[in-house]
Length: 106
Image: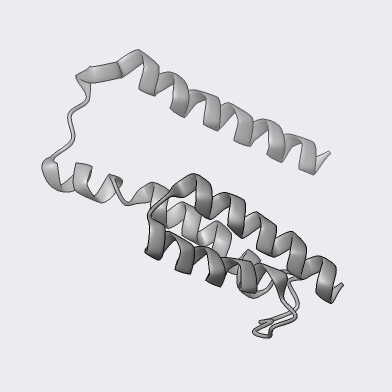
């Protein structure tokens, strides 16, 4: 029962925050400093999600070896992105390396 109440409470809070954004709309003005800080939120959240998945994919500590397909694919993806600056190519080749490496090691 406690988990259900927690989930319902989080849903209500999330809905309220999103509703306020739509209701208030453009009436809320942020300072330039706050806007600049908010520009980093997506990158920060994405990094917080991806780094643990790459470095510790099983949640049992760091797996910094060639047997970790997430780490190998991430390193190859970074290299491809730096070399080409093409997002779709980076995604496709990164996935190909991940699944290929997983199949070879697996």
